[in-house]
Every structure is written in structure tokens, then in C-alpha cells.
Image (tube, rainbow, N blue to C red; front, side):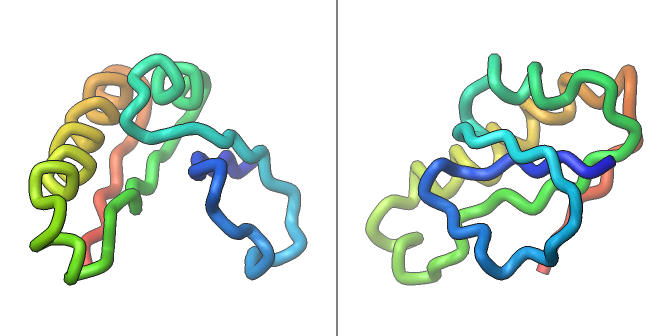
Length: 88
């Protein structure tokens, strides 16, 4: 089983036609993260704001998404799952 945690505004049209459980919420929402992490074995964390020009416009938000969301996820997976952080 694969669970995808995506923003409400994310386009999912390019996903393969496999069976996914899709949770539409904001990765910054601790309650939503906790709920999404229930009964998972492995977490692939790919959440980021990846537009370089935005870093100069909203640097605090870029850092909040990058650091705080990783910390929120780590809180929940440290006891129950294997964590994989993907960095490009």
C-alpha cells in the first residue's frame, strides 16, 4: 500500500494508475501529519518548495517547510517507521 500526502492544489494527473491512498493536506499541519503516519512502515519525505526565485521572496517560509516539516515527520516516524530523506 502506498499513501501520498499532497497539497489540495497539487496536480495528480501524471501519477501512474496504481492504487494510492491520497491524503490532501498541508505538510505543515502537525495533526494531519500524525494522522497520515498511522500504520506506516517506510516514509519517503519529498516535501519542499522547489522554486529558487521564491527563496529570495519568502525565505522564512522556504525554511519552515524544509526544516519544520522534516522535524514534524521525524517526531512520528522515530518510533514506528523507517525514514528516507530524499535530497536533490
